[in-house]
Length: 414
Image 1 (cartoon, one colour):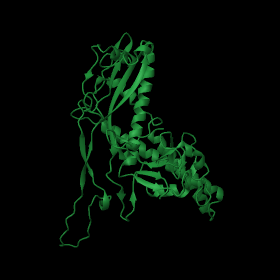
Image 2 (spheres, one colour):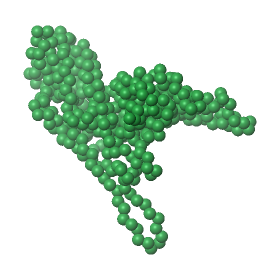
Image 3 (cartoon, rainbow, N blue to C red):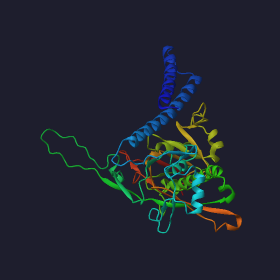
Image 4 (tube, one colour):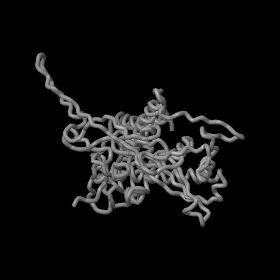
């Protein structure tokens, strides 16, 4: 749906809610049980639409920023040419399979060799043309947990260098306003000095390598190799990224939000399951405008019958293109989260607070020697990326409570 369609649909839901209230008011009565159920259902649906609208508006803003001209374009425009009715990228490759065949030969003049990749010493290979690199990184929301929802900082040019940028220091007692103190003063009184605190976020590309064997027969069919190669490379990069963005330790890889100081763990009340109070505590501890549940699919049967304190179901399956809803927020099932009863089986996240810094490009190299007797060529892809929370700690509210855009359900307290 477009942003306008989402807003129109939400307006329809809100109007239906108002109609229910107006009908009861006109008859000077409370809502009936059936009307109450309808009202609650409409409320949950409009809350889900509200989250989708916020995400769509955020994406539109990012798109506008990326379209703003700069002294040096963030992405150089691709030069597309035609030869024998085939689309060629700027280096003259007609397909990913054509490029992989050239990498196998190692002597094609169209190849651009990168001797050093993002400071990883001897790592090197042939730079994947931008056209095919973007195909590999074109994740849909259904296939990537973090990248499709995070704040992504585009790549630059080789060689990659660490980047840093200022951010508010909202840790400890500095809170939302980063240490700014306000005071009411009478005329003529001296105003006390106050200041806010800044910090530096530094991100440097980390390299992840993937190995994929291809039969030489398949490589001779460049069309089939293109389809299979792009799919396998996309799956490999996607899996490696999500694992690191979620639970990476930051040593030679991105620092995942689960291991960051800004994440907030909520101890469940009962081992090996999830209760309504656990989820309510998570919502209470959450921060962000684009929140979404990420939940292990092993919990579906548990959540499907879970009730609140008044005996009402708190989960609803998605209908008519709408996602499943839990306590007013969309649900995303994932096989990359731990199974039921393990820390992280339920997470309430606003991933716009997670920053991803892409490296300047992927490289591909090939060897026929490892799989020579099997008539296969082994390809190695190097992908450079970094990721970390945009916050340095959990956010302390004025009442002393701490909240986070990364709320993780943990095991029971000891």
